[in-house]
Image: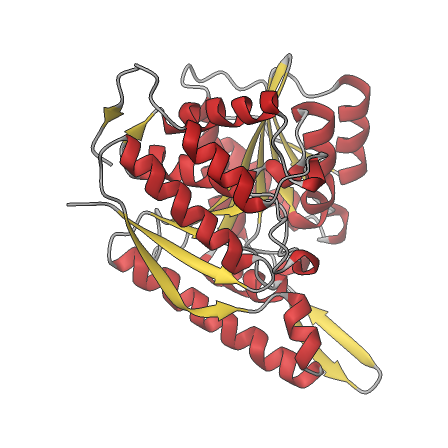
Length: 356
């Protein structure tokens, strides 16, 4: 039975990148002589710019919730059908975080420095980003929640993922970056209980303390940072620049849902946003989207070595000076994708296809 992958498309350059994803995934499937199906959400979700262009505050609130309701149901439906992964282009953040709260999401990013490996696990299921807005005359009131249950789920996932990342079981440091002084000591208690339950040491730190330690000594060889999104969203680009030597425009990342209704469903996305200013210009950077296609093919469609195959193709393009304007190149999105897909050949190596 062929694997099936979900596809959800947002506004801005979303349709262009969805086409890139389908082409890249199709080419990888051809190289491996496999069939990979795609099931696409019927709704094109709003970007923030598309909402602002045509709607006032009340309509933005309504459309935001409609997008969230539709996408959450799409995720539930795909999980129920056994679809293991979804590729999603950027959509309005407020809709996304309503979904992430409901489906209890974490975002995962492995950042490799010359002398260290950093696993960043972002808590997307609670905190300011997941809050609800109430409008009163002249003011907006945003309310949010933290819970023992979600905190435990996030910690348990981070530890489990770290042990997959480093199978010998050695983790040098687990740090949690939260503004915990605002939470009446509750988070301290929950973290201590969870650390004892898992038999690990977890250092709960203020975000500025985490920043200072990273600046002074960098991450230890195997560091896990579990972070509230208020800190992680700001610091992700800095961590990539300082320790990963990588631009966010080239990166893809994954969101894992922890709610029992969708447990095991993984969503892949580009790190960059909807780039509405580039819509229709054929200049949006396709690298992160192609990398997402390779990850999905390797992890969920049995195409062992697909990531290495695509990275080799991207290196060939770099050597040839082929890139979009944001990378200093002069080529269109279509030119870059055409060139990349042309060089995706096995080059004599044995292509392994395993059961997804």
